[in-house]
Image (cartoon, rainbow over all chains, first blue to last red; front, side, top):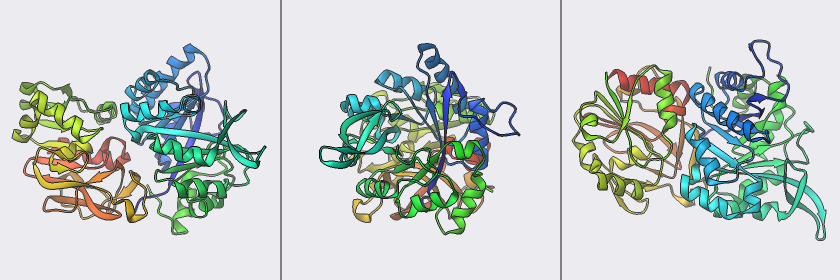
Length: 257
Length: 195
């Protein structure tokens, strides 16, 4: 049976992970390759590396990192952050990334989704949607945000999710800026709506604080995958424990030990 | 031992090369017929769309070379589909090594297409699955699949049972991506290289 995926997300700046990590068994917790390899060994189903570097030098460092990750780990990984052209995507896929995630560039130029999926295949094009529930002239609505959630657009998130699928996205990475960082659980209703409308997988992100939150997002939230960062980095949840918990609740989970 | 990865207009095959690096296998990435024919093992990877890759193979003559090979050949993902008779993906005549037609997953089964993620395989009857745990999980990304047939040596379920692996004579194939399928995928690649 197709399993629900658990995905740790690593923020990378100048080739190193930035969110403080607390793993005593790592030589260098800031080493993004070593951290990713450890998650893979623990049973993570995929990894996401997000480049938060703004400089050109940092960009080439990131591509070098992508190459080292691909050489080292034997599970799929997605890379994102600042991708805005076919050339960017080509460089990252050529370095060994399995998928790329685009966000602001897709909002600026939705045709880019079509172009990328034609050029590289839908299977490797992930569209990240950062959404926030805000008051508009029509009352409260889910609105797409860019620039790490700081900048509001005029795009409504639910129809946007359908549009990116029609344009050729292979997967949606849905982050609720309302729940992100709260540890109060994923945005279940919105995730269920978007995943229920979609015929492509939806990765839910934002708000995971305990193991039950993952159960909820896979059942009530209808998500195909659950993504989190700090709760894994700070070892508030260990991936083997999480997978065993979900397995014991009869969810389809890939067990690796 | 000489291993060749067949070079054609497939998408990213970098991860296949890295997977071979990890198990310490050397390889040549080439489309040269003489090099392919003299290899001990041939890997035919695939990421892409059936009709464009098939017409590329025809233009360069690889559509005749591959079925005539005598050494072990391992096709993965679209590589496996191109080794079948026909694919519903843009109604493509393929190489016909396996006499089976590749079909699109039904849209009305209430399941998402592509079938993307980790799924378990079973019913092993291949030397490539030696040493694998029962119901091993491997990573799939595909919208088309070969039904269960005489050549099925491992199966998977998504909407319907389908062929996860095929085998006939010296031809081996897997629908999933061994190169990113964790330890199970690595074991399958090692088993192929040990044939």
